[in-house]
Image (tube, rainbow, N blue to C red; front, side, top):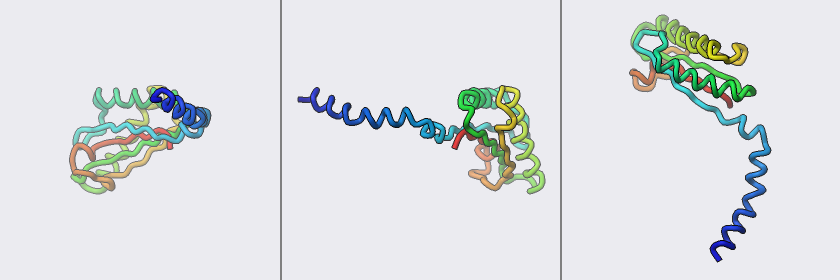
Length: 134
């Protein structure tokens, strides 16, 4: 009885599974996010940051139909003008590393957000988010 109900359930779900696998637009819509963190007041990439960017670049090279968006942020310390420049420098540094790691520059769009998305005024705010897809 248990085997029969399991087989019936599998038979009912099989067309759904086949439909999802066969629909290319389904898996091109799931964004993947990669956060890259920075030291206070710096746009220099650490070895850890380069490793995260390499993973993102590997994913982007495998999913060539997806856009790559790089968003730079800062914490709330410092002047608004300095934060705007710093977030742009961070986004540019990540963009350049992505290009170095094999992602076509024309696929990458970057934004400098300064402290506009400050979470905790700490490490989590000194970041660049790489989003692939969506």
